[in-house]
Length: 288
Image 1 (cartoon, helix red, strand yellow):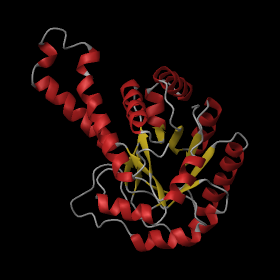
Image 2 (cartoon, helix red, strand yellow):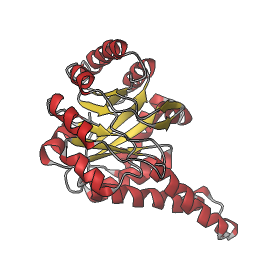
Image 3 (tube, rainbow, N blue to C red):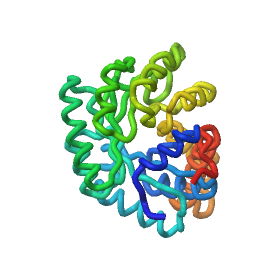
């Protein structure tokens, strides 16, 4: 199957009551690990790419070509979208031009009217090319590529207006946080989520900061219209932990254990483990 927009896979998830994982990718190991795992589990997936990660991987065009080449080499048959995560206004158009099949324009840090105007422009440009669009109201807590959000609760009235622009998916702050959650985290605001769900006309909703949210809260969020859950930090932590174990055990000093193909293998397996756990939790296995 060709690389696709995220629209249809999320509408299917919304209608059938499960969630699609957005797994952020950071290099070749991430791309291979995610695509191999979703193909094994017959699950759709959204490959998230932050602007910082795109720069690290030598630009938007290189990201697209890497994903396409690995996708074709592995013979992947499940729906896969390449999604710009927390894109700037300028970055959204650059990623679109490079061949991304889904774009998140994050205008949550702008005054509301400016967020609205810019979202409309991004929607028009992306829909002209069959590319799905995600918008955001109410900043997500924590830090994402240097952008720090306080984690406020979105205003449902503003959500209704942004949703009416024709976006295909919608992220709203409901107390979620990027990165590790602090011990005193209050949990998701389901009252806010319920209000947003009512006013956004059944648009698939997005839950950012999927790392660290208890499974029962994730499942409840899915029942209230969340169709896309973003996961990044947990994969990074698993990769780092398994790589550390390998080196601390001295395996990099045994034979050719320093070979990157061996050195990075345990960390790659750690990514696969997390992706497998999330797909099972979100309920997207065998939904391709």
